[in-house]
Image (cartoon, rainbow, N blue to C red):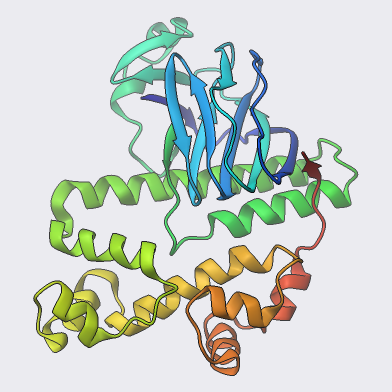
Length: 300
């Protein structure tokens, strides 16, 4: 898998952004660009090829398309597809792209900065992988919507507001990548990761601590303690925070009523959903929805 590493003291250069929405059958065009493209899928699956490798990018997953490399859709999407996209350039003159440590382009980087490939895993660097999953507990989608709103308000001009909003978005992505790498260094037991992933997939179901504990052969009290230890939240609080985070993605779609969003996220009581949302986010779902309301749409 490809990675892009660059010095975070250089802001990324925003080019354009938008929200593609297709009701079905979308195939990504075949092309080679001179910019990077960051795509974050919100709904459906994007089937796309880059560097002779096929990717099926699902909801809450992302792909970064690299400049000067052929990419194209290898099959149509099934059903509705929605994703955010942004084209950008890297301004760090010594940035590098590597694949498992092998330099692929900008070979002058080795002469200018021979340790670049050995020092990407710090907060002072952007660390942008070709493909990955967006953590449900992070702010990636919110920052993407904010970027779209800023660019729309400025009539899609390349301004410093857009450059820095993009840079914040990509720093958040880099932070998520670093956290994921720390988890993969066995900081969290594999069984806990399995349960976390199971909750991510089944969040809309009527989940209970007792039911999850029984499914994974834990005592309920012990399991909720483990979640407190490794996530910072008791199990039920963690589930509700996952649901609230997902609800923020849905609230950016004006087609969903607040009551519908609550139901889709596993809340049977709309008022309880609204109460939790305000507790965690400091505003009501409707206020959140109205915060970032403008974005460029590609309706396919």
